[in-house]
Amino acid sequence: MIIKNIDNIEKTPVNISGAVNAFKQIAIGSSDNTPNFSLRVFTLEPNGATPYHTHSFEHLNYIIDGEGFLVDTAGNEKPINKGEFALILPFEKHQFKNASKDKNFVMICAVPKEYE
Image (cartoon, rainbow, N blue to C red; front, side):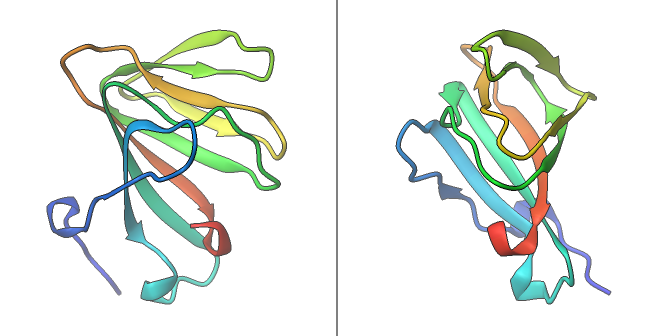
């Protein structure tokens, strides 16, 4: 059994083209010997965004804090806020954006462990 506090998990910049003011923490992952999934926490600072991208695996998201947008495959910005969930299916192009100019947007992202 493993219990961790988010305040004690290293936060690293997302170094992918198109990422802006984005940071990642691996809350539970392969280094914890998880058999199937990894839980990551992404923080998008004001005006931050993940890259507009696609990949071969699904991921599940839960918004911990803030207000933002989830950009879909057609480029439409859909509001997504604290307390809401999102499912991104394999090969769905997507992007998360922070809607705030002064508050962080924070979300949990669950993926297969090999893609953490």
